[in-house]
Image (tube, rainbow, N blue to C red; front, side, top):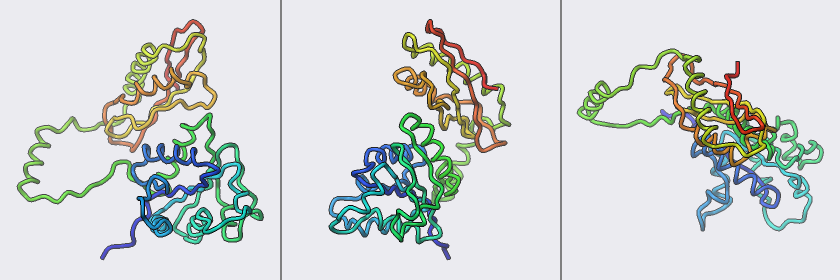
Length: 289
C-alpha cells in the first residue's frame, strides 16, 4: 500500500499590483536552484483552466507556501473588491494545514504586518518567521532561502528515477559501467579544492578584466556536490563593488563549470576565496582560511 503523497512542491503567493516582478524573478531563481517544483499562477496555469480549482490542487500538494509581501500587500485587504481574493484564499488554506510551511517573504523593504492588522483567517501568518530578500543582495538572499527550503522539505539534491528494464538490459548496463566507470570517489581534499578554485578564479578575473577604478575585495564561495561539480558559486557580500556587472557576472559565469575530484565522506562542501582588485586593475586571489 502506498503512503500519503509527499509534499515537496513550493507555491508562490503574491499580489500582482504589489510584487509581480519580484515573484516572477524569485520563481525563476528557485526553479534553477531546486528544480521544476515551484508553482506560480501566471506561468503555470494553462489557458482555459479553472483558476480556483488549479490553485486548490496545487496547494494540496505543496509543502511550502511563500507569501511574497511588498509595501502595498497589507492594504489590499482593505480595498473594495469584486469576486474572490485569491491571495487570502491561498494563505488561509495553507495556514489551516499543519503539514504546510508558510514563509512570509519580505521584499522592497516591507515589514511583516502586525497580527492585529491581518484578517482573522490570516493572523497565524503574523507569528511565522519571515525571510527578507533585498534587491542589492538578491542572489545571496535567494540562495539562503533555497537552502532553507531544501532542508525543510527534505529535497534530494539529485532527482531519483526508477527505470524498469529487462535482465538483458540490466546486465548490459552493468558491464558498461564496469568498463566505463570513473575512478571511485575519495575523501574530500581541501588543499586540492583550494588549488583548483584558486587557479580557476585567477584565470576568470584576468579574462573578465575589471572596470578601471573598480578596486575592492570580495569573499567568493564555491559549493560542490559529491561528484565534484559546482553546485553554486556566488559573492558572499551584499555591498561588494566587484560583484556588479559586467565584471562580477563574467567571473561567476566562468566559474560555474569548475570541478574538483569527487568525494564520498560528506554530502556537500564549501570552499571560500577572497578576490582582490587593486586600483590599477591588477587582481589577486587568496584562500579564505
